[in-house]
Length: 471
Figure 1 (cartoon, rainbow, N blue to C red):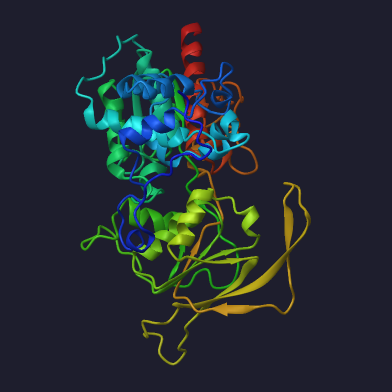
Figure 2 (figure 1 turned 180 degrees about the vertical axis):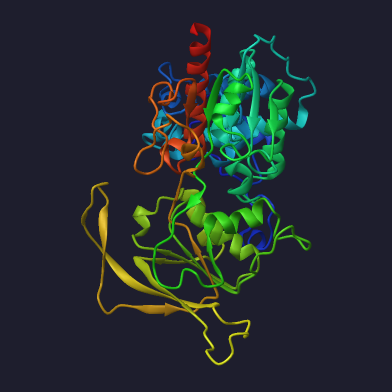
């Protein structure tokens, strides 16, 4: 019998006052009983609108039916047909604006918890599966993947399953891209990412770390080494700043640097590989998921006060609703309709050796109001003259977006980019302006979601397969 409860089963979590002081995963996951109960809310619609909302086209009703039957490994098998990173997607994919937004149950009630069910199934498989995946028969063709983020890993997995010899080249010392350097441990444990990478290695994918394409090797040299096609999934790791006075002060970080030091280099540990400021009062500028991650990380590093400074209202916050709610529960102070105009610092002109010289002491913000819509359709923030105030902080994290690094573009003749630095591709294939080179994810679109990057990786893998078959 269907479960007609209008509410989805809530995700069990750590209590806010507890989790705000540790880096353990916030969400605790469904039990088997809760998962089956939630799966019974699915109506198994014939036209499956939820699948249309999934960028990688997971057969959602089919995997949920397996959960209903208690066949959790069978459910994983259904998901694995479309996704190489189910445990990741179940945690960080914005299902509320994609598959769940299309769920028929969501018309008059809450949609089925598709994301929480995907996470449960993936975790069940990772904890119980004993059989090794079958290594596909090799077809004799070699493909290089630049970057081991979600688009690169997805493209690698799909090509490996088709028999290609795939090598992933990663600039950092650990595979995973933004999944390991950008998303905090409390939202995506790194052992989960490593597990997914290990599964790809079992399919025959080689991963070469500490290789900077454009520096260590160029794309042209990859072709000379025998690779017949290249997929560029190098992400968008170049941070943007506001251009206001004081951004060069000590204690001002880009969100990329702040999170990379903490997530990848484990700066929160007692003997970190890299230092990070354990500030007492922190202002994070921005309203996206990265801003929420930075603010919640600062809290866990021991900050007594953390502000989110965002120039629009709560309705315009681009971060996921769940992340905003978690941040508010943990005590983050949201300063909405405010915008920084200057970062203030301590200066002692009489003693340049004073260690406090050049350190952040505050951030000056001005109140905003929403005016007429801009080109994006959102109401443009307008300053209210004379409304400035100073927030007492000793650290500022700028989280207003990123763009693709120009290194690959500058070292690859024939590869065209747009005015934002994104690689120009044919949308339906991921094909670039250079023969044999495909691209996808943030390197093309700028900073976006993990699942959209995965979708681009799948699209490119299919196109590369067709290209090499017809070559």
